[in-house]
Length: 437
Image (tube, rainbow, N blue to C red; front, side):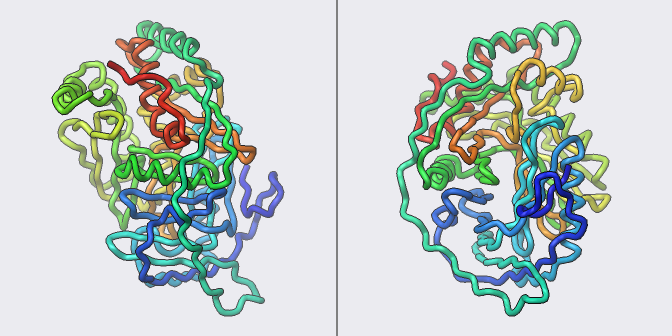
């Protein structure tokens, strides 16, 4: 099912896409991006203070089911073909863009969305720009002037009390034990199991304040907000920029040390861990196998490296190549999702085990999140360290772990607590429990 245009009925398919007029100009703008966000409906894609924000919603493309990504890509191409484009900046994120969030599973009740804002404010490489996007019809005159909101004053993060959701701790450890038994029995090599925390948000400016804290605390991640999905992901699913393809694969995790010496020991232990290296190798193999058919050349880091984040260490591998078949970033998202880093190996068997063992709908957690432009270029991450905020204020936070042969249920539970930390602290809550010793 595909829905185009927020004004259309939920079961409608629009045969003729809206005609858009898009104008991008350079501006002299130095204020931070986050304080200009709409606090109730933020649209954000940022890392190290650079990226794009969207204001207002001109239209959206909504899809569901197994073909949700392909359907979104097709509808986006149709929209672009009808657009009147004038981009005088030419940087990633300028011109016509849509912010996207894709449901993890084929059978998810959650919609997958591409949201086209009315105004985009962007900053990259020391340059800033504004894009105005309007419907183009017979009544359209000169483009409307752009009026950016004044940056809002910084506020304290909202106070959300989280409680276990559909997968409480004791159920999670039991599910991990079941998964390990199935791995030992030869059913699959790896499966990623997640659990959720649930809370209530009652503050109008809460999302902007929560995003500001994520951006301050985790500047090297992709901080994002799309249709109520907010988070700070360290994992680049795929990036396409003028024919260059890149990705960052993360799998294998360790807590940070209590001091500099123990922190180095933790990183070294992770780099030598047979369990984590095996889990990481499966994730890299999955990413290479799905990206390689679309590239003329694809190179990977010679060895996994340890990636330092404020709350943990990850094993990481970077991939970089040259696009070989003209695929758009959404086409590549369709090819690689879901990766072994968030599903497992073999993919289909692992997905069936996730549906059975987790017992809840992941929604957009662990799905692709990012943006696409008129050329098909874009940046997409995996929606990790995230929460989905519903219109009624319900906040569902998610965290998961890769389960392999020698996974220990109690250790995996502790790892999920560590991974919950960024999002629950962004909502003013303490970490669910102490980090792994």
